Amino acid sequence: MTAAVSVIIPHYDDLARLDLCLAALEAQDLPRDAFEIVVADNASPAGLAAVEAVAGGRARVVLAAEKGAGPARNAGVAASKAPLLAFTDCDCVPAPGWLSAGLAALETCDLAGGRMVVSVTDERAMTGAEAFEKVFAFDNRSYVEKKGFSVTANLFCGRAVFDATGPFRTGVSEDVEWCHRAGRKGYRLGYAERAVVAHPARRDWGELKRKWQRMNVEGFGLAMQGGKGRLRWIGRNLTMPLSIVAHAPRVLTSPLLPDAGARARALAMLARVRLWRMTDAIALAMGRH
Image (cartoon, rainbow, N blue to C red; front, side, top):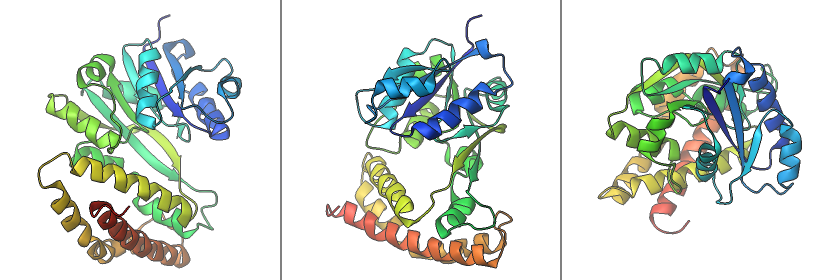
């Protein structure tokens, strides 16, 4: 049987989580010969042989020489064979019905983003970073329905759509840029509620800071593609402190947080993240990064 869908996974130096991701894909409710898995490794320090050992017979491993998750996804697509494509990340855990639900969504749209859930080590003892991410990270329904893009940790499309849209780019928010580019070509984006992928929350301030350093750099690159992008970027980020007050009720009423302690830690992290994002974003715009 020829595979109907190719699952593309970029990987760099995360063998333990890659193993969990591949195990989750092996547990999909589709017949195993209905899909292939391609792991595109970004020259992990452990070496390609170590990645292949983790993959075993579950996936084909290819080397993506150009650094970055976008180029790795492009390399994975180039090595894949099926007419449909499903993207996830090596630190993600797709639910058993993820593939079948995503493919079903493509019957009514050209590209689809599925539901993201945030996993934590202990639901009853979340760190501030975990509590913050539980509330604010990966709101993919809102991204799809209000902002016109899906995260690449949970994205489906046809190969013809990918080929017509072109590869993922570097130096920008690749998921936003790619989905918007597909939209400008007339392709329809839909939300696949039943295509569920779990992503682990960042555990501490250091992990959150690294995430937002990358997001700011990519967001600034995207902003600079348009006229007057620098001024708009500065103006938008100067209002960042107002979002602390605006989003505090979301923390206080979230059913995802178990108690007052988790809410307090999430509020503190909300303030820290938004104030840091503002100063870092302005430093970027002033060339002081």
